[in-house]
Image (cartoon, rainbow, N blue to C red; front, side):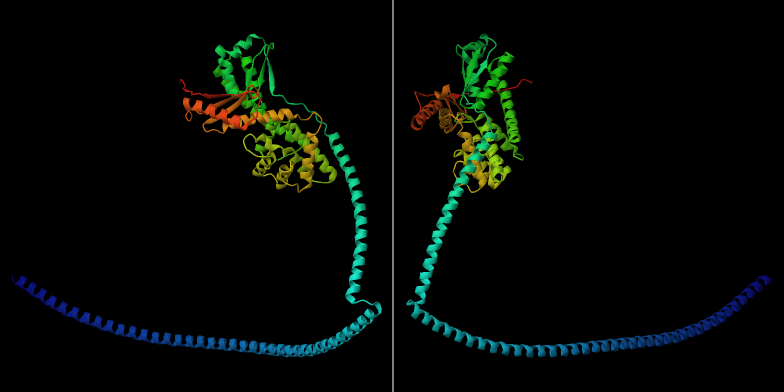
Length: 510
């Protein structure tokens, strides 16, 4: 027990001694830390003062350097200003010298001008004195003498000019006529084209007379379908193994001829087959029109034509003018104009191009009213032909005055080609114009889809749109067409007007 008490007492005494020792140690450490902090603070202050002094020195040095540089720049500018001032002073001195020189020259010129005025006055005085003296000697005034001299000179000049002009005119006329005869004869000799008169009928041979019955069809249905589809009159008479196609429009007649030949070769002739063969033949003729246009341009040596112009040229293959084929006529005019242009030194390419296109309006005269020269010029202009070509087309029949040599040559070539013996036939052209007018009258009415002049102009068949014209309206339309034909057209005998209203219903079995 005692030992326990002693142990406890010992421990308590040890703890008290330890606490006292720890306090002494802590105090010592705090004192040391305070001294160290004070030392660090003192060192920091000294270092800050040192850096402050160094910064102030650097700033002073920089300010000094800037002041030195500024003073140097100022000195440079002062030197430059002084140099410029010296230059300005020199220029001012030079200007003053020049001004004084100009003043001296001006004074000299004024003096010379005054002297010239004095001399001019003296000269005028002397001239007046001499004029008065001459008038006294010649017994006439100055104006009278001048007028007399002018009249005499004018009379002599007129006499000489009249003689020279007369001589030149005679020589030019003789030479012009001689050259013109040689030129035209040379052109005609070099362009020797054959001319054949066009007809309004085509004869289609048959393998036998039995085919005529199939062509006619039961109760004539085939022939009616054929004529309605093609717009061509099919004539079946006693001519052995042949039928005749009659139409004033060569394109229609050609399509009808090809259609009939295909039907005969196929052997199956009925309305549906007629329509099928008609469409095929129409496509073939369209292709042939393009080929004819290309061949004509190649033959005439004319290149770069618009495709629509090519097709229009090809359509001329099926057009006639007073019985003369318009395509062959156009090619001939192109050659004639080109040869004459070559001999005269004019533009050969322009003359040949205008010659080939001069009658292009005839390809569309059935669609547009007006002179074919004007129509052709408008068509060529729309298709980007040159103004010179358009002018030559418009001027070849005198609708406008010819302003170029090439336009005159195209007109001359047209006249040469048309005036050849047997080239044209007046009656055929008049006949065709009458048939065209007959169709135009029928197509001028509302609701008419197309019309065909048949039986050499003794019948007109009018196809109407069924949605616009009723059966009752068809009767009234026939009367109105007949009345207008009587009022506007001159014709022999009588003309039958047939209005056809057809309704089709088509369906396909699939």
